[in-house]
Image (cartoon, rainbow, N blue to C red; front, side, top):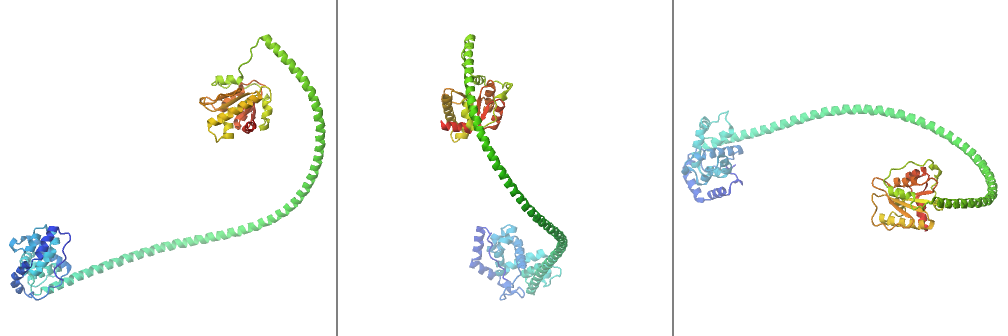
Length: 484
């Protein structure tokens, strides 16, 4: 191949301009060709008219490297104009960036090539002398021999270049063969490894197969046992079905006997109800006599009480027991009365509210938020309190009973309407719940006074029942308020 290569894209812009200008100056080419004509004639069998040989790439690079190394040693007037800029490059950039110009000058300027050859051969020593004589030492690098032969061009230099190309190609082929051998060895190693892995996997699969066969045998045995158990279960099921049919017959007969007995019991019940009607009539007449006697007794007791109050000069009572609880507020719970069970009732029937409120001097205690959140929880707390207090005012006005409503809250709420006549509004203090305040109100009442507590809280109901109050659910009061 010709000793040229494309320009290097990494060459600085000013260097490219200088090199392009040098390569494109026809006058300089003419001068170089003229000055080297005689040299070309005297260059052995490398005279003009014969084409340049095709150089292997390693040989071409070695020629450029040798030329770039000795280029700065030439006098400035012996350096061709295109290479003067290149001679100033750093050594590592000279061969890389100036390769195209160097190759062109070596081809076109025999005089410049002879000057370079003289210095290269002097540096090569014995190897350069051997190449000039047309021989190549057997131990010499063929690339180095070819590069020196191209520059010195002794007799038979083309054969030396051809031999170098053959050696380079042989070396490349040898490298390819070595690579192929290495790859083949690697494939053989991988294949051996794969065979070993396959043997291990085969052993694992054989062990797995043996285990699966063993499990299959166990499953078959279990299947036979399950089938045997299923047959036994089906036999028992048939027996149970037969027993069930027998028992159904017995149950039908027993049901017929029960129906007959029920009819007889109903007949006896009708007779008993008729007798009870007669007894109620008699009791009503007797109760009328007793009521008359009781009225006379109460009238006598009332007159005696009036005389006793007048005799003792007692002032009218202006405070009730619940007022003392409201005033104390922070007092500790007192001991329960000796016999509270006398006032307790085990019932939570909402229909009894009116009957209990009809008792003399009854006291109605209401768990405020427990009732409002159950009846009208969609309202705000302020609206809930206002609606409940207003409704309780109506009940107090209708019955004349004492009414106390208790709310949870550490402080009295702002914005409450004035409490209606007969209605007491209490708020539990900080650290105390409305349930505890209700129990203290119940404990403060004297034994014998009817106290009605309205709350759907089972714990509250159980607590006040133990102290003799009548617990009722919130629904009873809500229906009573809706009826008002």
